[in-house]
Image (tube, rainbow, N blue to C red; front, side, top):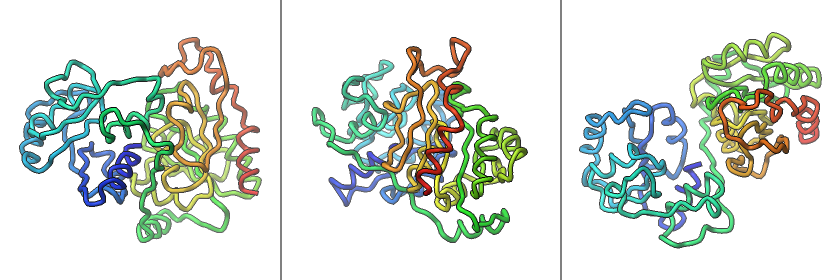
Length: 317
């Protein structure tokens, strides 16, 4: 979603150089953004202050930048720009970081009701209203890598391909059941579609269970994030939970069918017009919990395979 911010910045100042300080796992995505000049590896551990490492990173950046936009609201995220002595350090109020952020922006949840709006707002002048329509992310595709990966994995393109992405790092309250993904895969196979199951090594067991009941190809843990970007670009559609891969699928231009559990499409929608939202209206939703606090997970359980299948076939036809 940060790419929407980069697009706004570039539209206003095309000559502006944009570098991104990012963790290692996200570098393949950042390097596929045309607006980004370079990605700087953040070597700090997740959730750790790791002050010595942050000082080293800051020392390498000192004197190189006139402005830093700090997207996370945490104290830790603001340390490197402050230590690097970047003159203007823009960020939201949060975690008592008044000394670290000198261009402090108010965080109004009613106005900034979507994550992408919160990110883009940091690139605007103080007090400026958001533009009416925010630019959608769009990642570069490597045709050469795409061909290499398809060949290396022995994939075939005789039939239209639909990607299934059963993972969601956040927790089980955002994951449609493996059984429903498996049933959907079998139905799509029978309807003439090839199925690729995409995800990380953590999704490999789920991917295997989905593939067991169909002709789906389990690619979970067998590809890099760069490979996933290029493979998704081959697919006609994707079926995904509200996850990081959902946003990647949206950014490569294919139609995405997004299944929402404890989260909300009003807060983290797919940033594309080519989308179908599968979401149940319940009094307890959205709770944004990692696990269902009521123990029934109806927000996911009540989304039927038939309803998802019908939307996929409708759009393919």
